[in-house]
Image (cartoon, rainbow, N blue to C red):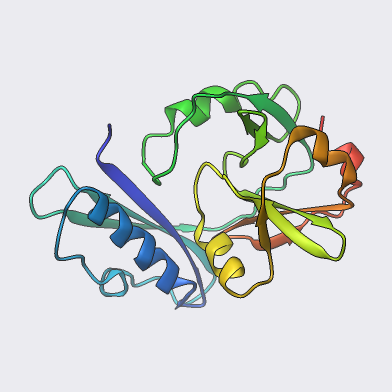
Length: 199
């Protein structure tokens, strides 16, 4: 397993967002590998003061004293207007690893769609870049078994703005809306008709 992990953090006009949840996830990775003395991520982030940036924190835990490298990329939203269902019962991406080979292989199956929606053991999980939520009976539900527990997803669950539930492929037809969420887009409700969104 790769021991190179990352956090992607949103910064706008120099302000860093959702840092508490990024810090918690980073520390959970260290704990999984029995690494003590986590660093304070805020001490490593100094984004530009103008504009919206994706702060990419890369940390290598194969070294005894792990390092954190930070790069800043001006952010341009990637528009997603269609998803293709792709099936893989063996994919594993529970930690935000810098190695995305499995995801990249599945992404290559998207045909003319913008991204894919991965189905594992008949359950809806995630796209390659975002968690997903569906609107049903007055509330938003997100798959209870995502590939990766994203930081925005965790925050919205804590705030009780979304709720966990197993979502099967056959359930998709009962939802009226869909939203994507990640650190950069927050909670992005798709305006396209849901029946046309899945291709």
